[in-house]
Length: 241
Image (spheres, rainbow, N blue to C red):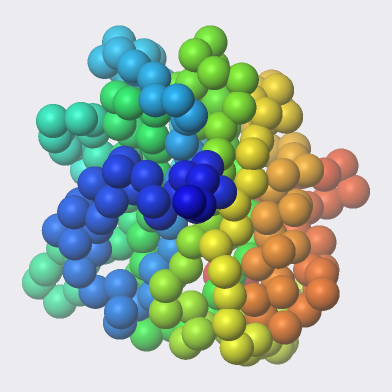
């Protein structure tokens, strides 16, 4: 039998989350879908107090999608914070982050974040997304476990193209290679930077974005997404959107 740690899709917590995806992100076939999962093995008990100190604390900055998220949605096993965009007269959830009480954190959403029929995959944005998800993971799980199983999954990514930049502009797009698999790794919490180095590139972040580059037919990232001090470019607004 395949070990759950090697395939998080077999875990009951993963399947539970699919119910929220069906409710909040019903158009993933149209706009593409990414999901970042952090799972503890074995399961642990996270208190509401820990979540109020971290994930639910408006003073703690993680990503724009959390900074500008709606009021947290409570559900039996945790909380979800949703980022919405307006299209015509309707609000649509395009990204969300969920923390469960039993050792499961998920960041997921549409690849076409603003629902504007954009087929570009922005590696700058995604590098930052991975880094900040892992830092949230560290802050919520620290003191409970030493390691987590971290996975990156995509659906309908074949309709997207990796953006290559020059002078702050998109100059080329690399198409989908033809197939892909989930990216699953065991991460030691000590390898995740704390708030003193929140924007300094981590090795696990570089490894993940390098593996994603292969999904678009490249054997490595075509350019760096951090400066010579290893500070991620995305929070500085360059390059990209």
